[in-house]
Length: 150
Image 1 (cartoon, rainbow, N blue to C red):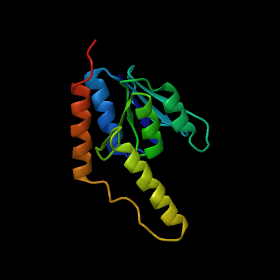
Image 2: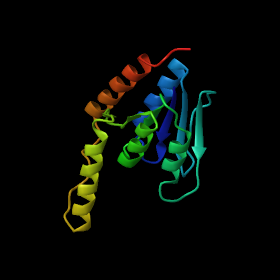
Image 3: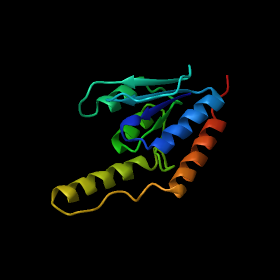
């Protein structure tokens, strides 16, 4: 298992949890972004800077993710693509996207895009707080604990 992070919009607190988890478990972690991302000096942790552009970081993750890898993203289309490849997708709020749930999430995303483009204000996501942080930490621990060893 490798962990790929859609790092452009990843909350700092989630990054810190991922760095600690990578060090603790030895699982390779790559932060993918179109801007420089500071990572700790650790052989298991790296940053991949891609060129600027729409979905360039997402495309780099999809290209590299393999079955059994874990992708951290709030981007629903990216999650759908990596799930199709057999990877796991977890959002920074602790929601594990699955083949069963991703289609409804894509449909809701498209519906909300349509609403926003017609001028209806929908607001953004709720603030990231202790509940979301704990949900992410718990889900990450569960996924790392059940990964194949060796």
